Image 1 (cartoon, rainbow over the protein chains, first blue to last red):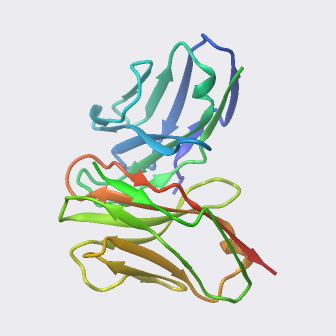
Image 2: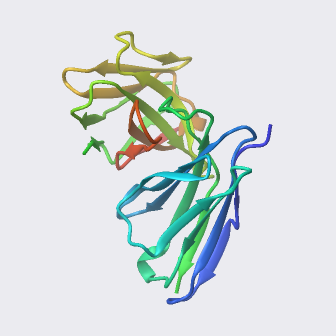
Length: 114
Length: 115
C-alpha cells in the first residue's frame, strides 16, 4: 500500500511569488492535514480537510489556503511568499473522521523562499 | 488551548542503554490521545506509540513504553536496549478525542545513540 505522497519534494521561490503543494493520502484515507515545520516555531498545524471540507484551521494568515478534492488528494497554496515561509511542509492522512489519532505523514515538501 | 512541553532539547546515550524522554502537557480536556512521533534524519514522521487518556494501562510497543501520569499531565517515553536506528528527533504530541484531527506538538528532543 503506497504511503502519503507529497510533491514537489524541494522547491525554491522568491518573495512575492506563490506556491502550490500537493498531497496524495493513503488509499482510503479521507482526512488530510497540513503542518509547517521550522527550526524556530517547530511543528504547527495549518489546516485539516475531511470529505472536501475544511474542519479546522491553525493560526496562519489568509495567504495560506488549501483544498481537498473528491479523491481525497489535497493541495495547499501560499500566496505572496515571505522569507519566513521557508519551511518543511508536512502532510498527514488518516482513515477515520473522529479523533483516533493515528496520522501517517509524508516526507514533506521543503520550501525555500529567497 | 493545549500546550505540550519537552524540556530536553538534546539527549545522548550509548547503544543498548535505556533512555527516558520527558513530556508534560496542559489541557482542560478529559478525553484525548497522546503520542510519541519519531523523525529520523530522512525526516518522515513515524508514529512510535499512542496512549488513550481513558486507559490507565501504559502503552507498550516492543522496546518502547510510556509512563502516563494523567493527574500530573506527564507522558514520558522509555526506550529500552537502544539501537543506532533510534537516533532521531522525538516529538510528543496531543490530540483531542473529538473533532478535527489536529496534533499539538512539543518542541522535540534530539536523541543520539552512540556506538
